[in-house]
Length: 297
Image (tube, rainbow, N blue to C red; front, side):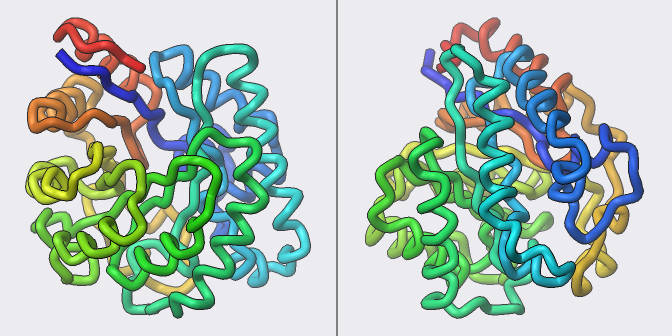
């Protein structure tokens, strides 16, 4: 049996659902502006259900996104709010806080091709704001080799462990969203030596093929899938809102746990959930892991 890190599930989508307002291009950042305490409520719920890591609500907190609505001067404040809410939820407990770094420009948009030099500088600014208050930095939803390079360069010299997570095509887990093979990130993993390599925000059915490749990279590996029916063209436009995406209705807690336990059988030691995977899913997965004799760490 293995020691398994159990991540939380969806943060952004869960906040949008609990916020109850019409989604905006600022996504969960808007919810955090309007009702900041809702963020700690979500983190605390996941901790109660068995998760050992709280992923900060900083995925979409980028100056480039805030500039669209004239809030670029609020970047530092929003980062501080997200960290404070995660710390509040953890309290004196043993949970860890992961500082989330989402795509610099937009999710699932490798066509935007962020310049690695510019991206590295912007990610480094975010890391400087978070590093002293998190236990690890989590680069999420990387859809191309170019995105991976910029983010990893931006986290060089970070005093905390860095994890990187790619997103793959829903119909072919061997390919990044860019169409490049997942194995194409191997030289970057070798060069920057992140502490773990993961796959996230893809259909659970695509995860096993990706994991098989990640397992060859000499790092702890794992996965956290989404619960979308697929990525629509509407979501791939400029400044989309999440109501362009649809939740699956065949991926309840037991069904999701079936997928995640299969990833553990493949050797994954880090599992959790992404968009549309909520607290009930994490609670069921925690129970299944313990029943199988694994230790959640």
